[in-house]
Image (tube, rainbow, N blue to C red):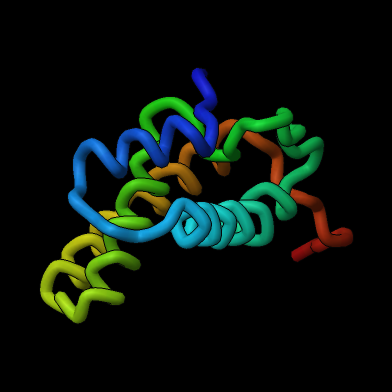
Length: 116
């Protein structure tokens, strides 16, 4: 699966969603998503995917997770709460799809011996 870079996400956001926010703000939001993915998904599995230099965790059809999160944060900052809610719903669905895919393709960390 194809992994993308921060620069690719920023270019997509800026071409698709009119905004006046600095690059620094958008990179901070991408970093927030990366930290969520690392803590909630990557670190909970054995032999997790190694982070490639300049590449983001989500790949292939799941890269919309970054776009939706940035768009939601832009909407929230602009006080456009209906749009914020819509973008967060899209983000949550996309995040869940990536999480489900990762769970299907990676063995979770085993926590002890459980017997019935």
